[in-house]
Length: 303
Image 1 (cartoon, helix red, strand yellow):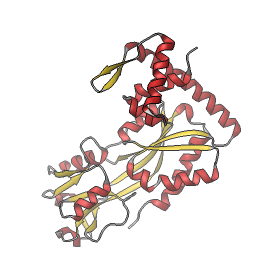
Image 2 (spheres, rainbow, N blue to C red):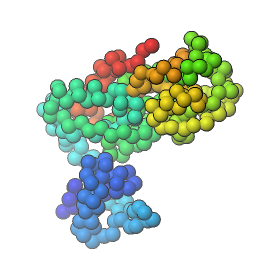
Image 3 (tube, rainbow, N blue to C red):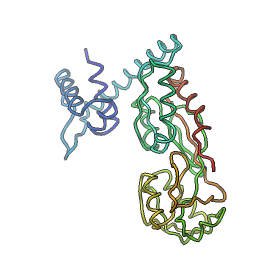
Image 4 (cartoon, rainbow, N blue to C red):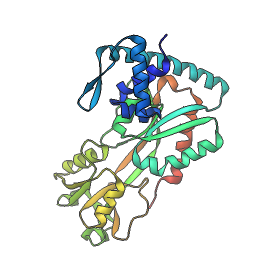
């Protein structure tokens, strides 16, 4: 009989792409995941992973077995949901994927609250880009995702995935304190065409919003610096190297060298919680989403 833990390890590699990423998602070491798959290879008398450069790739047989593993894991999840639902108490492990600024500004308080009220719930957080976390939920690698989208770029939801709104996060234009716009109460998008921008890398939700919005205003944004972390962007603005559009959630106090100016109309990104339809009745899911929504008004930064 095939071992479910070993199938879980193979499924994680198929979802995350590498042994290291699979190990991080499962909470194991890479060597432990490799050992699990090696045992599965001996168990099935089949080669499942092949070397490809510095990484590995799944064989055709491995892809078939990973698809079967996903079906089995879905059945196990359904059984766990029913048991937890009958107990009526959030419990068991809950894998949560969340983007960086929410992981910093929202999750610590919400997770600490859950831990105090529900000691049988083992919630585990990892930072994941929104583009990736939604797919991880759909494929069963993550139980719950906290993601975001923007007003002009709605987030598509895959089949079999449900969502709930957590709250709306407002954004400001950050400029150096000596910048001509620093004295303005508000600024319109049309006034920003000649600015040097500091932005997140291409392919991220924030970068896509900036490019689409300024292009719609008739300007091609001049992005001179790219940084994933909002704190890095703030530091670059403080050094006088450009301006940036930074959300308020998780931003923290600004240094005296940086001034926040309100953009008119105010950009807004919407935070959402996403989970699989099959797990919708799980108390751990419903209570975590309710807790996130309850904490949102307390952490949403208002000027």
